[in-house]
Image 1 (spheres, rainbow, N blue to C red):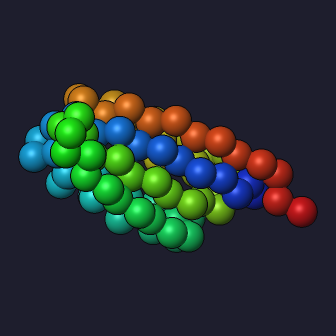
Image 2: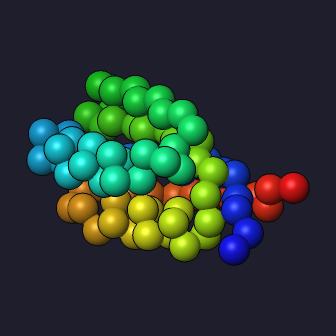
Length: 83
């Protein structure tokens, strides 16, 4: 299956509720995560996580689906084909 490189953006509204669940899922998919940056956006009471990923669409889709199912978490991804 073709691998893709991309960016996954994660917005977290309730960090105390979601942080453990998010970290658990990211740990499951550590092999496809190239880099991770997390920034608290205190003025909006949000946390923002940006991931650089390299994996199949199935792997990335499974990870983003699990993340998006957490209450108060929104996920968007942008992927390109890897050559």
